[in-house]
Image (cartoon, rainbow, N blue to C red; front, side, top):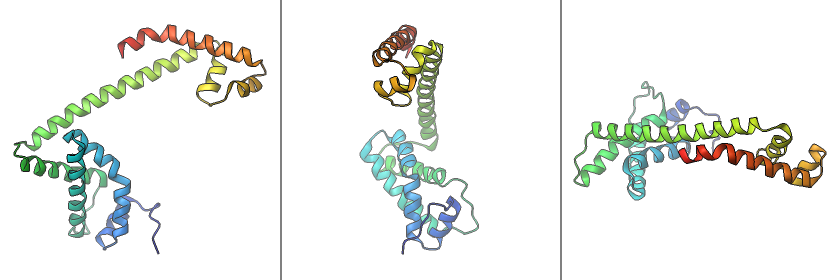
Length: 191
């Protein structure tokens, strides 16, 4: 009978793996694989190489857990695995005949972090500007727009909710989109 690990914390899962529970390892893998892969692909930049490194990283992680002293505490399983991934990446790079140090990797990761943070900030800033623009709309234009975009209502449903004719809903949505386009077009050139 398969155990239900959904309510297990990372520490409990690690302890289970140390005690020989392979299903607990599978659960750790399922919880961490996307973040670990994203981390590795940012370093490597090559999907095939990233897949190979991730696979070797999890094998190394499993072996490490099997030999780990039970008193050692892992604060973040994902962070621990990513740290092992860095080491596996170095092995991969050296096997390819490329010289690269941990400092080089740290430098590359810092660059990637800055680039990703900047892109995220731009998206968040744009999202905030869009929200501000929507809030500036008069209620009669804002309401049908919000019901359509954020709530997913069709024009007929919006008309029933607001108690107005369907053609009025369409007109107000059109005018709201035109106003937003007017207000936001200068910003879109910046992004």
